[in-house]
Length: 169
Image (cartoon, rainbow, N blue to C red; front, side):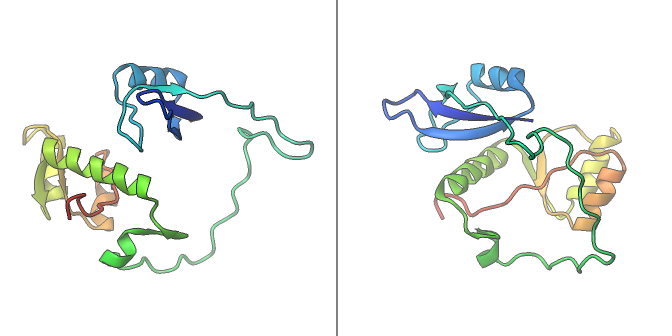
């Protein structure tokens, strides 16, 4: 993964923001296709900003160095119940930033516009599509943690996205 400081050149203000990409070629491809969007104004004329190189301080590991991960605790705490509407709109450190909320609202609009809602039948429909029993298409709906994990174990790619209220709510 590569982290870029970006600037929107769609407006004279040149809004600054950052983004993470698989590699520089992935950023170039997405930017050329107009798929990198300014979170402030929605402009798609985006360029990399000048960035300082990541030089580690003496005694500290380089940014890309492998750092050992501490072992997990012997017993994991029980999984929390589904988040309430109040908690769903907040990150662990506090309220969700307005730019992040706006991006997630745009993502929700795209999903609702381009995918079929299958409700609680999400896991079953994903399996039918994977097995060729149903037409392959974009779908969204609800699935439990166990259903999501089972789909992944079966080699079916699924993703969860934070489902924020629509912008007109």
